[in-house]
Length: 204
Ligand code: SF4
Image (cartoon, rainbow, N blue to C red; front, side, top):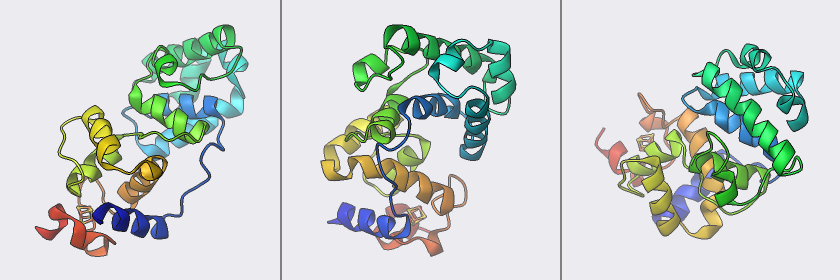
């Protein structure tokens, strides 16, 4: 089946990490910072932020201006700094410092949409969920796995067409594939390990 071949070839090239092994709070904050920001910039800003404010309670008590200074590189940092502080405050006060592990509760946090919530479930808790960011949305459409206009539609469609055993893998695989080969602009189709399965690639 096409999807099995795609996943197995991508897994060969990008061996998956250990899901559920990351700190859920750090995954949550990093994903909030990642909105409209390049991956490498997000990683740098997350590192900087957590090296100054190591955990949820430190961030809850931080000055929003100091948070701004740490995340200045990311898009909309002025909006994100108070948001990060508020998320930390809510988790500290209302959830005893523990990030909730269910979609509905995660969605009540400021600035948290389905992509962020799903990333927390996958990377923070190792749960089966389909986390759709810009890479997953773009590549799933290029490969013809879905035919959708928005990441949310892609999440719904992928949840339908993708066997559950692949849900956790899909985000990491397509993010790494999207950074490496199937780039937003100028995908490197001649180097692509699944080119013969891709309707977009065949046209080139
Ligand atoms: S053939 Fe090109 S467009 Fe298709 S998945 Fe590969 S890199 Fe992306």
